[in-house]
Length: 214
Image (cartoon, rainbow, N blue to C red; front, side, top):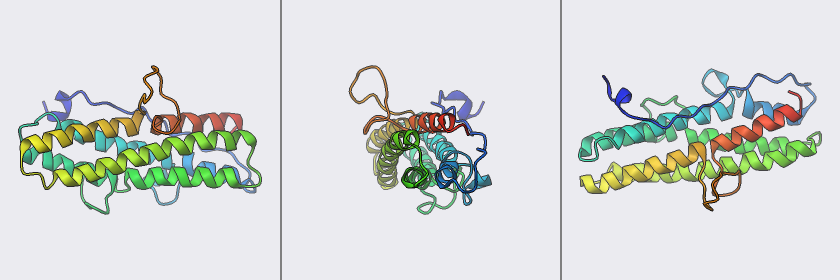
């Protein structure tokens, strides 16, 4: 039995949205499509929200694997490098990620949903939920950037105790980036700053798609 089969890994149930049928003249729908269904430079040209979730899953998986041997410095450093590759492959070019990077993908989600909302043909519903998508993506970016910094620090750690503490923080941050965080302890996770993650970005992207009948 390999390590992956031994570890209970928090998973993301990401959904690739069906490609919307949209008029070529509808600029807001075009940019929504970049988020939801297709973008030209992603692996297999999937939507930015999809590749963001895929890369987050790889990073979280390896953070969790790292945490299975908190007394093994080499083990933790190996998987920290895998986390870095999934977060930003420009830092470490080879690894188990998809070669796009969570941070770049989430930044793309934020950028294109905001562009969609600024188009003259954007509906009020799109504008409203675009804020929810973008805010949650922004939260994810922040947590992922923190995880990247901690992972880079872990690579220079001299002790297992230092590396173990970093590993656990990295896993926590990547879990938040994936599914959000109940910052106010009210029993729920919203799209608001400090709470929403990629799960909430996807939720509100789907809401837009439904309202726009795409």
